[in-house]
Image 1 (cartoon, rainbow over the protein chains, first blue to last red):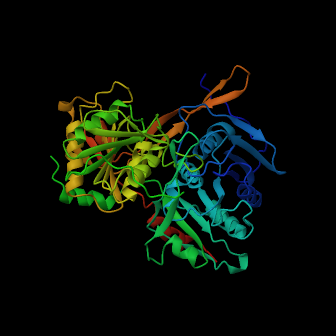
Image 2: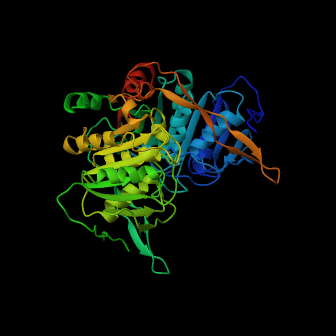
Image 3: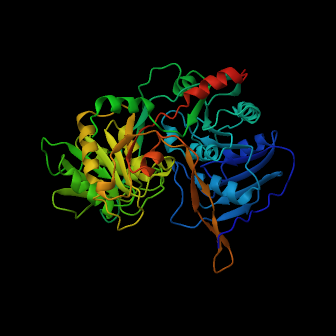
Length: 268
Length: 268
């Protein structure tokens, strides 16, 4: 049975329809802080994973069926949990839950930085990318504090400001925002910097162990290494106490490499 | 116990060290065709998932330990299977299996196209991106034929040509190649086109079903929609019977959106 039946959204108002998602799961404090803050701007719906999905990147679930379930949440917020990845959540929200394209998608607030290369591993950012692909103005928010008890109130007024700007005057088609908030008290945050993605990477260091049967297994760990000295990067802005706003695109074409190949490779 | 112990590679020759991976798993016909072809260029090692990992994007495994196991394979090819994602395979290969950075990483040959937007969902391409992040010249190969029994011999000579060019004169740092091969007999393939990523997308159509207990579940399906009329795209090249070579980068910064925000948003 192929169907385009929609679960009816409970409210039909003139306010913007805002989809809130994340990769830490529907029960994470970060998404709660973001969803409550978004109530100032529109009608808020959460569609988020039913468990932590950090590091899932742009994974989608094609070999297993997906479950979608309404869950009890804060007053005035309708929330659903999904058995799949953050990207699955956005696809299900758009196709199954809503009657129309949401006016805004906000993903997060992630527990931990998604600046520089973290953008490609991040489920939070991949959900935001998927929304942008659907033509929805979209922002991923992250707080540079991995702890469950991190204080999400510190940068929340900036999240509302950026979401409002995105509703009023969205960034060009095919782009979205990767917003990272330094772990600082609100009065120490210096403001917002528009940035490029720092050229940084993770250096792997697997933790090798033996199970009780003597078989080896590995835990992925790593060191973050930033050799980018630019003062226009997200890593620089965060280090200096600014909120970094990095516009992101999903056209991955390396245009300068097209010229390189045409000039240097003899292709028959 | 944190350790940097390496599994010793069995051969130490002057030939290039070539890492072969994929997302269809170590037993897929596509990786076998690619690995055998690469023997003409160097010493070939396979490190690939122990099961299909299509659609895993740039997912990494951080909440579970990883297993890595040597498996019997073709004469002259050392092969390992990993319990994780394609990106995990590349990380384990570099950190655990090899004494040094491989000279080339080839990923695939994928069973099915990874042209246009498929690049961001593709485990095959994400493995190739991860290798590029490690500073390894890297190519992802895909055949536009989803069938298990697809004929991988059709474009294999082009794979060898492109891999050799990549060894001799790699594309600029921070870039890699997304190569897609049309499903045509070799004598019908018109040659190679250097392309940009077509601006296309999947329109979701979830297949809604009920389980024996009457609970709803969903299968992700979709229609591929390409509205990009450009004659410089990967989709155009494939439709015309060419092999598409799209240079890809992992700097996702949308530089044009930086200008847009600076000009249009009043940020305090």
